[in-house]
Length: 106
View (cartoon, rainbow, N blue to C red):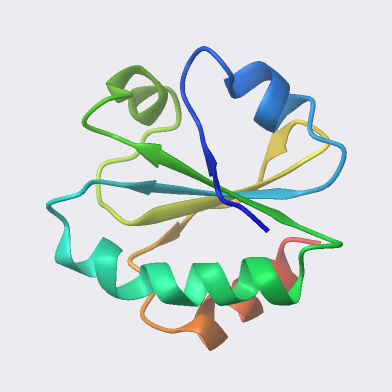
């Protein structure tokens, strides 16, 4: 399973028109927290590849998308279902925290 790089050019097709839920991670290469939580996202993507897609938005390159969703702290994760954004998860610390938050989004 591959992680999708989300840009303003493909946001509509990859996120809003996605056939299954997509967990979007707003991050930046210089963010230590972002790099620490990234392996947990990779594992979730592998374990749940039939039910969820993982996408990443580099806020340095996609400021417009970060502003559109009010991202002020990174990492911020938003789970999109049927084109609708759920409640954001800011500065997740563990895989368990992410999975619990995903369950609450249903």
